[in-house]
Amino acid sequence: MTDTAQAEKAKIHEGKEADHHPYFRPKDAATLILVDRSSAIPKVLVGKRHDKVVFMPGKFVFPGGRVDKDDYRVPCAAPITSELEANLAKGSPKTPPSRAKSLAIAAIREACEETGLCLGRKAEGKAPRLEGPWKPFADAGLLPDPSSLFLIARAITPPGRVKRFDTRFFTADASAIAHSVDGVIHADAELVELVWVELGSKPLADLHPMTRNVLNELDTRLATGPLGHDAPVPFFHFYGGKMQKDILS
Image 1 (spheres, rainbow, N blue to C red):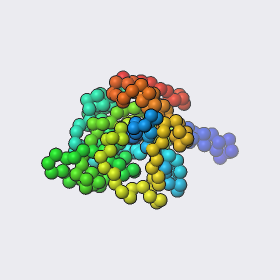
Image 2: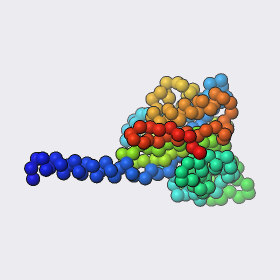
Image 3: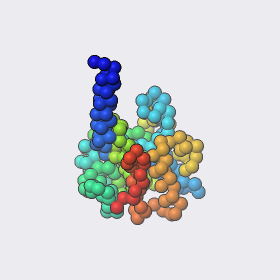
Image 4: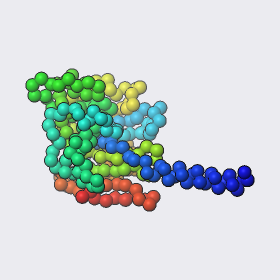
């Protein structure tokens, strides 16, 4: 085979790869941004990732991850609010109630797994037996409580990535934290440090650009008063190689 033919074959192969990755279906994921409004300038909770992890080593991040199948089934102390369910249903295709609940529950689970902070409420009567990532709730006599969550934004990973996520960014007030698990944050953990930092402070300047976009939305909401469900929910996605910002409806 001539050099020209080999080059053409390589181009065809590269084209097939490029055509494949943009259509890799994103997985549902959720992120939780906890806010402390007890002082004049709101603070948000960030965790510093271990220096030796593959993804974003040494960076400050918010707890989050993909939805697990058990997130659909775990019993809750209260349902998600009808307003949150309506916001999660926006967009196309519509998100059914069971999927909406799983997204909110995933945000609570990831926060507890990564930070040791649990958003829950005392179970009425005998608490169900919970295992795995939900065991800290059971040990404290709690059930996860998604009723305090608000949807801030939705974002989809750009095409061309092997791993893509359709992430819903939630926020909740620090007063919703019902239990703290000791020993989750340490030198060998995924997160080695937890810090409450003021919005606009230096640790937040080094966040992923998309996360900074979401924080700007949160900052705008907090500047106008208490959190609510009636604010427009932005949807960040990529089209034609450029980021687009739409409003979910």
